[in-house]
Length: 208
Length: 214
Picture 1 (cartoon, each protein chain N blue to C red):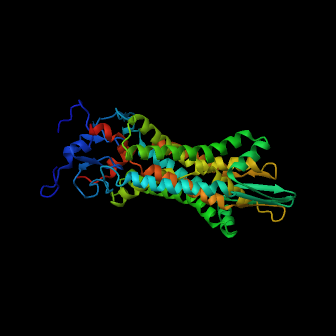
Picture 2: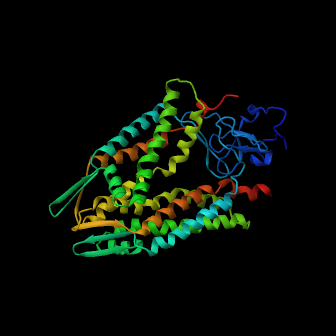
Picture 3: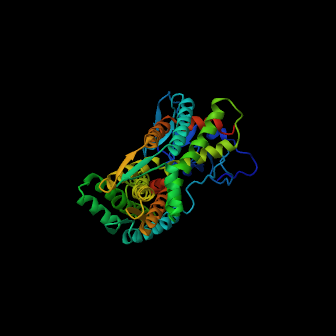
């Protein structure tokens, strides 16, 4: 194998595939699991773009009811109120908790929407072979994997409040159906980001 | 392309090479100094690491993590007082409160992401690292265990939960008085220990200890 630096080659170009868990290489034609760690080895994750797109679609679909239905119902002797994600943010702004309002807005609105746009963009760019810098695409992918989990904040807020605030007629908090849809949306978007094999983002350079 | 039938391919011949996990580019395997890491020249992903006394440090972090997790579960987490009525809950109380009052789904999600997945990850890592540290026989199950421990990492959400708790405290401060208990601080310590564990754990070193020898 001519492995002397110019030009650099990928494992796939020299007929090898790398195990993503332990890093060992094996021949691309082999169907056996990784000899050293036992993981299933594929040169590129099978149906990676299709899987990412399917999970993303479920994530987007779940995000719609997550915003339309209330995520939290507050029952107090002074009256009952129900809040959606957005109205919850406005309640926080009205009560002067600007930092917390910003945290919730970023975690529940900005991050999910940014993730939808980035993953959809990456999947479309791979499917239609768009001209796009691999470095940019790779950075966007790392970003989505890093920020995705933080959307769960609102789910935990509702869980803590609903578990704690159970004082009967005085004050009680009940989760709304919106929060279930929101949690589903976060989980499926995380699955979508992790289904996308980052090695695909660099392949069009290697194919030249 | 070479097929594997016939000659049992000699893996040793590929051992001087390593492919970048982020972009598949081949690199020559470097012999790193302690504390060094090698990055991919194309995508900047980490290709190789070598960390100082990684097994000892990681095992210590795992054991500390398990103890802190058990403390967080048993000690009071938050207490609430309003109009003379007060209540005190632990993390498990919170989950069972959700479960019993027909909010099972939310209770399950909380239990899974805060308790079960992090604990499973710590237990798997603890088993693998313990057997390496005390020179026990390397079992094939350790490879599967370590793989799952790596895979579970993004799903352990104690850090996000803590932010959620702080937000809850602020949100409810106008309606009732909330106070944090000892479990809150031990869960916060668990988050710090998890960060330390991720910094101390060198996957390459652990794989080198447990991979099947050709």
